[in-house]
Image (cartoon, rainbow, N blue to C red; front, side, top):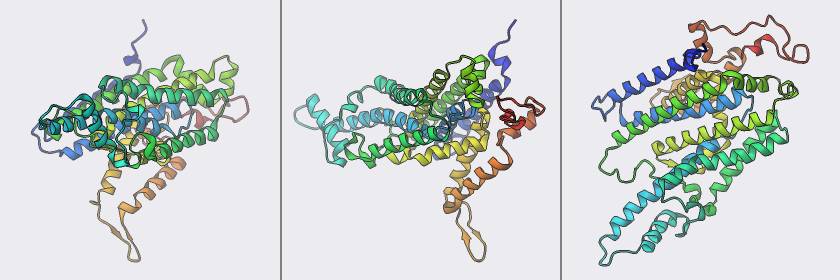
Length: 410
């Protein structure tokens, strides 16, 4: 009798159990639960870190398993944040406007309320009219659908055009980066309908939750982020297991051979690209309400490059490696950039870690690439005794030496 998916992949159960224990410990130690050992701001930091871990899983799925180095997945992350941010800002502003107009002698009409909301939201860019893209902002249900549909459709169109043209390698990476840059430049414009450089703010204030402290709200988002991460990990582990996972690994290692065997390579790549775009968007929809603000700078191409660095440091081609690397880099980055790390005097120069943190991150990426290609996930392999399949140096590709033993271990 065939064993269930969980029993065939015990690492999934270990990850989910560890995530549940982590969430429970943070909950008990938080201000909201009365523990008082973890501040509300740090609970938000942990919740945002879980969201970054989720998009890192998406990046590992598309890059580590399918071999598509996408430098545009943070664009989908940002779009998810914008979609939910539109509802948060509209609903919150509506509550403020209705409370303000309640003192009028005559009750305001629906149109007067809408006009007042538009003036409050778009006055900063010299407008008061709602753009067409805000037509569903009044409905949480519809905006949640857009969180999935907008990034998914964009990924579908872009992926279909790119993959049917058989664009691969560095050229595909450049195209994804160009897509991200074009989207960011468009959103910087005031007439984009999303308040240009000002972005959407006040997202941490949930509509109708004025009496609920931020400590409790931050805990809610931590739970939601942990649940999304757990489900995302479970889904991704299921996708990469079995025949489907073997095919996408084959595409990563030797796309031409997989196509020669009769598989529709473009369909597999398009499915993975769209799926990971949706996962990234869901992560963004949970991240930015905890951050409180989103603007076009969040979609800059450098953010997607950072994402690739996190996954590489954690260990490409290992879902748990992507999570470990992202959590480590994110939390260490927060520590270094908080100003709490003392400067390092060298006599002739003083290193201020706030300014030098990105240099440290870049050097870490180079060192990991050169000396530890398995990343931090390789440490887990050492502890658990996981051994990669030995090919004894045999050639795996159509040409001699095309895929050597060390490449087969990825």
